Length: 99
Image (cartoon, rainbow, N blue to C red):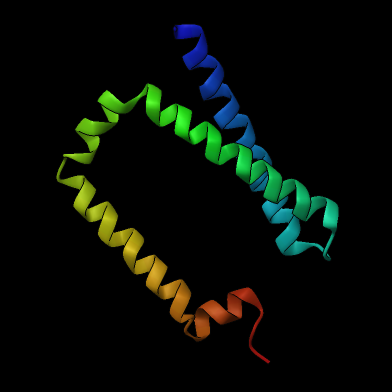
C-alpha cells in the first residue's frame, strides 16, 4: 500500500510541474497548440491523480478540513475567485487586456 501512495504522490508532483511549466509557456509565449494541448491533457491526468491522492489521504485531510484554518482558506479562495472574475484594472493589466 505504501508503494502505491508514493507512486501517486510522485505522479501528482511531476504532473503539477508539467502543468506549471506549460502554463507559464502558454501565458508568456506565442500560442502553440503543442504547449496548450500538453497543458490541457496533463490537467485531466492531474485531476484523476488528485482523486486517488484524496482517496489515499482522506483521514488526514478530514482533520484539516475540520480545522479553523479551513474557513480562512475558503474565504481567501473565494475572494480571489471573485477578484479574477470581476477583473478590475490591475488584474486586466497583468493579463494584458487594457488597450
